[in-house]
Length: 462
Ligand code: ACO
Image 1 (cartoon, rainbow, N blue to C red):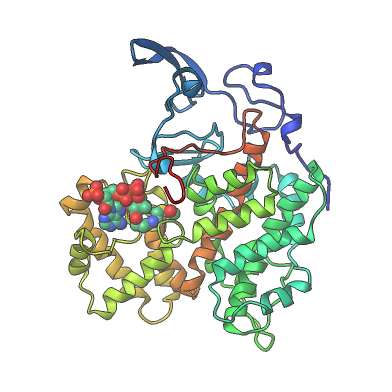
Image 2 (cartoon, rainbow, N blue to C red):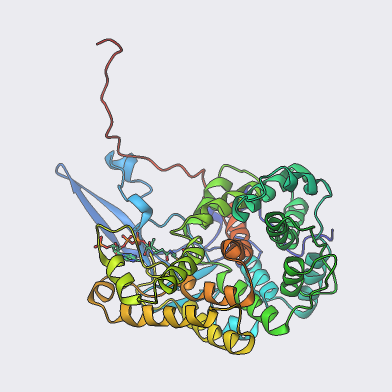
């Protein structure tokens, strides 16, 4: 393994907040999160005749927050915010989203530009280091990632111990957790760098193995002469008795999908990675927990649910209108999967890009029987929902998962692998957020409080 190209900030090395000026990165590494700007305004809280003032701070894109770190000490109060919809858990310089305007930027670059002009590994570097890589940096990074793709041979027995029909997501979470047992060196800049390279390099191998295990086929070893996406597709679809030549359009489309999923600020799985990492759990353990969080149907698991929904509608004769009625009915458990988002209150910009690509991929490769039909149903669902008062008034629009499944399906990716594909994409974002958290001198172990509503003191037999 080569030496780290950047200094990976460990907590002990970071300067104290007082050593940096507002808005300045905290240390030499590009992309470290700076302090938010303190404002002259304050938020006044009056309680039992006493007034306290809490400072307001502003981020570089104008998001204003009240700094309540002294709230409990000064008032005895805590905040109550289930689902954290109003809570800024950290400062971050990685991803900016304007949910009202449908804007997504990584390190300041619009997602549309990155999707058009970058590769996934360039974006991974950008997220982790704050700047796009120079030519030599990229070449060296690609070389390292390409040359650490193999798994320890013991992994064969590890996969073999799991049930044959195991869903690939928990298999991936377990395998990534297990990497921590193979690489147990004490934490240092070099070992953090090594862990990052190993994760990025081995994740496609793990993902493909989880699928081959499900199929009962032999694992296919990685090939170092292929690019990231082509290597993954080959590990998925080749067999020892039949080579598979990845279609360049499919490899490019997969690379694009990975870029679109690469980070999305403090979503459920990223917050999980930060939370677990905040206890100083290592990177493998933190990422493994992020994979588990991503699996849920309300998060990354939605892409699988979207295709299942489209297939259900197709099987019932294609009645998109009836399904939309069910999704609106509070007595029915159905939701319109792939619709709605905690942050986006307009069209998810990733969905716009994916809708266009769905059309191109379907025109070019056709996909398995019924792919075109599912795309038609998806478009019809979208059309109905976007003109329906229920969805309009709640600002529910297609999210990234709505069209990604249609593309995966056309590419021949099996449905139970969709969320694993999301994992492959989100990995660099999780790593970048973990690094940022570990380099923030203000970071403390994540430990929310609660409003206790259980039994008051009582005694056994009383
Ligand atoms: N179908 C029908 N109604 C919906 C949907 C939907 N997909 N999404 C939200 N609503 C309704 C809710 O019932 C609620 O209605 P109400 O105010 O009358 O009670 C209102 O819209 C607000 O919804 P919440 O669930 O409170 O919104 P929240 O921000 O908590 O949830 C979420 C966001 C989980 C994404 C939600 O929209 C949802 O379940 N969508 C479907 C699953 C999905 O696509 N998840 C992927 C998200 S993107 C990602 O994680 C990569």
